[in-house]
Length: 247
Image 1 (cartoon, one colour):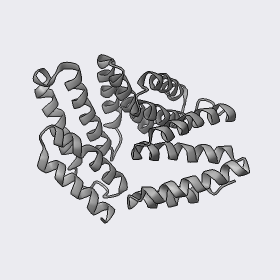
Image 2 (tube, one colour):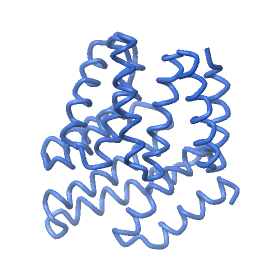
Image 3 (spheres, one colour):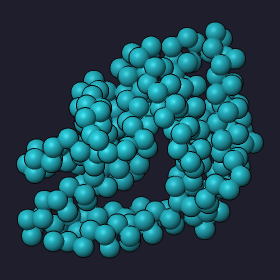
Image 4 (tube, one colour):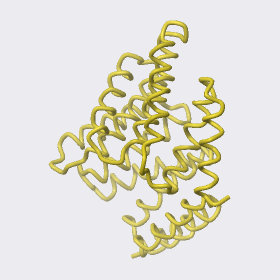
């Protein structure tokens, strides 16, 4: 069995300093060890992390290959309807959406949604993540009305979770993009500006941990603020991310 807890601890340190190259090296090394030793549970954990990393790096071929492998391992291990399995499936669906396979992603998201519905475990954060990513998949598939419904569900769930302001900000910006796609900038201008302004306020919440996750969110949100004309604030977010990463 590979020391998965220790591997994840080292991986988190890589993300704290934005060292994707070292994260990739670490994951691929231990993936090889897990595969060689027949540790399929450890291999699944690593593949789950690898697909997220490759998605972030824009490597669609590898990200999708990891998502496919994760689903095969879930079936092989017969993990059943659990929160942890649903989380991996959400990650798979997110990869599919990111690289132009939204309709396939929706099948996976619905499977994850069924698992979370069946589970007796408290999983508010996981449901919020599912709804947000499912909304993105629906938008990519052109199902705008359903997408807006799921963004609403995501916001409702995440508002109940302390410290979820960065995730709420991302969802607000996603909703702004959806409103533009569904209705056009002229018609939805007021609602779009409201979403962007609320995202700004959420990211400026006092006491947010200045960690790798916040830096990642700042980098992710900056181009959207820039797109909607918030140029100075986009620059602030990029600078904030650099400071957190120690660059």
